[in-house]
Structures are given as C-alpha cells and as structure tokens.
Length: 172
Image 1 (cartoon, rainbow, N blue to C red):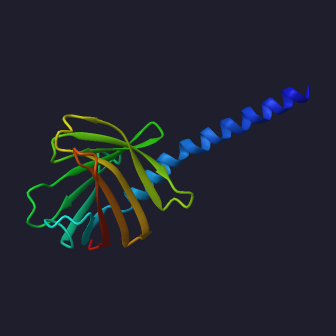
Image 2 (image 1 turned 45 degrees about the vertical axis):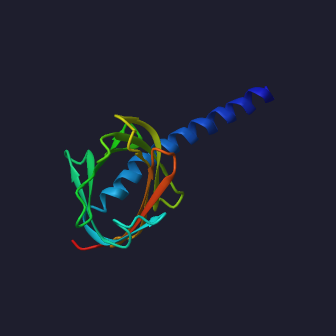
C-alpha cells in the first residue's frame, strides 16, 4: 500500500509539473505581445561586426493574425536586409520562425525564466540551406513596459557564433 501511495504521489507531481510547464508558453506569449510597438536602440556584436557595430537599430513588434502571431521586424539603416521573425503558439509551446536574409527559416522553441521576464528561444531545426549560416538562438529580456533587450546568435557556416545585442527603448 505504501508503494501505491508513493507512486500515486509521484504521478500527481509529474502531471502537475507538465500542466505548469504547459502554461508557460501562453503566459510568455502574452508578455511578448505587450511589447507591440516601435523600438529603437543600438546594436553591439561579439565578435565586433564593423557593418553593424554600434549602429542604430529600429525594431517593430506587431500583433497580427487576430492575436495569434507576433511579427518582429529589424531595420538597421544602411543595411539591405529587413529580417522578419514570427512568434506564435503551437499548442502550449511558444515558437519562433526567423525568415532570414541567409535564405533559410530556423525554428526555435521558448523557455521562460521563473520571473517571466526572460524568454529564451533554443534552436530546433532549419528549413533551407545553411551554406551562409543561420540564426541559432534568440533571447528577449523585458525590463519594463518601455525597455527591453534582445540577444540574437547567428551561427556562421564555420560553426563560429556571432552575437548581436540590442538595448531598446519604446518610441511608440
């Protein structure tokens, strides 16, 4: 009988953990949707990338598809690309698909910090060629309603990561 109660307790704790973890995706998505608007700041890179290092960056976040997607768009004046990233729920999982200027579409899945202010997207897979590299990791850190930071890690074809950090403040 003791074994049954012990096993029942473990099963209940496991189910509770799964239910709690599943609720993180929708909560994180709501937190990120609250960032909808226009943002500006500076970009720093490691290792330094002369074409973007310390340049102004403009970020637009827009809730679309009846609240089912968040579109993230980056503009760096003087740069040809205008990458688009879509964030969305797949069941209870918060997902990200990056439409990269390298011609591919990496997908990532979110994990959320215990305080809910950091959403960390880890690489799942990529569609398209990685001959020119691919985006590999993204992290959003919410400071307050008017400030957040973003970390973007691009994996070069050689396997060397290049990190871009945006410190952003709301303009609208």
